[in-house]
Length: 310
Image (cartoon, rainbow, N blue to C red; front, side, top):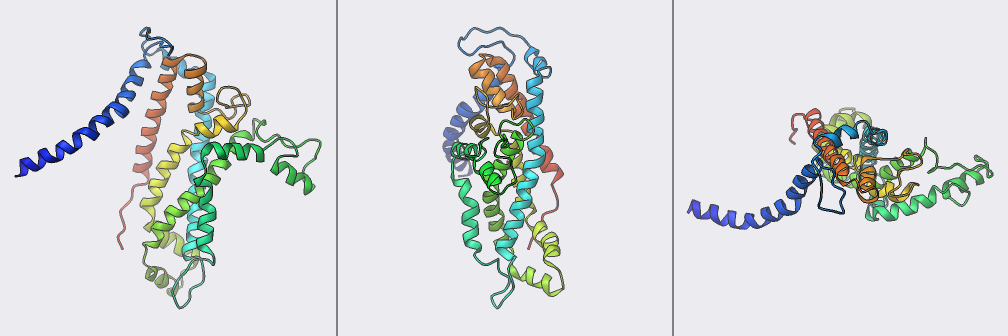
């Protein structure tokens, strides 16, 4: 009976597992193999070059600049997104005054959730086009027009947001932040709603302030959710391809000006599709994969703590 059950389960699993191997695992294996060749993508002819592509990567100034930009996003984006999402989630769930119904969120909390989540409903390409118009370098842009109307900016010399090497990456980071906060607000709100309100009421009765309640009650009980969010945001910081390729200046997938907003994904696609250096691009893909896996494991290990039950 037990063996028959195992065969029955295996029969249902073999099909999905086969599809997963063919369409997910095999492309990774092919990419790893192509990274040791000088494959140009348009032809099946290629030569084995060993580790030459990897050696060229770490002497490539553009790739190193892209790696540094990914690192800057990795340091700033997850931290800022999680802090803001936690703050807003706390306010819409338990930030209001206590009443006969117990601890409640601020007035209109349901409306705020919808407003904050709305950017996440839009596609990344729509967001890029929208924010490219907002960041326009003349007074027709929303930001520059507002600054000029307020008398803060000179109408003859508006700020070139997306054409300034010192600003463009942070403009992109702000859009990613604006896009992601709403999703993680809803995620954290769902986790907070599973926490019994009696815990908050007991903490407040014991004289704890809202700040102490957040750090002593809310954050420890949400730690598993925060850990998961951190991993997903770190992976997002290692990508950013769609937004940067549409939003930033530069031919062939953006990344300008002067590679100031270049990330590894945009440089990979430029080498693969525009320069015909497909083997070199595959080596970049392997590096991105390895870095992402290492980052995920390290993040989970560092943030691991004892699970709190309630």
